[in-house]
Length: 75
Image (cartoon, rainbow, N blue to C red; front, side, top):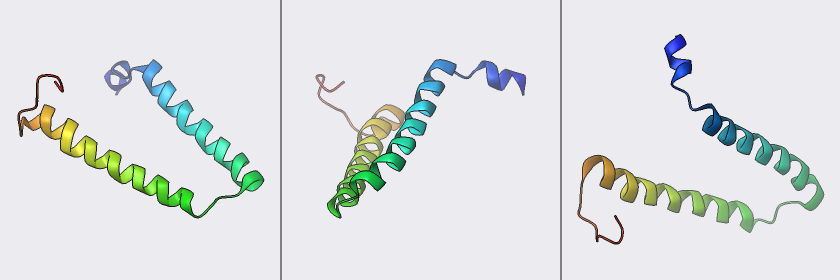
């Protein structure tokens, strides 16, 4: 169990954890003050979908599986 904690990059983990925490607190303050337009969740869901496709189709499949060849500029 102790070796698990030695492998954690605490700086990166702290950065991502604090980013998530601050975004949740920021939304909890912003939404009651400004409200949410109906397009904002649509934009958010669209961005999440597009980003997931890019990561799965591009980054993961290229680097993990070598599923295709890319142009040297993209490498």
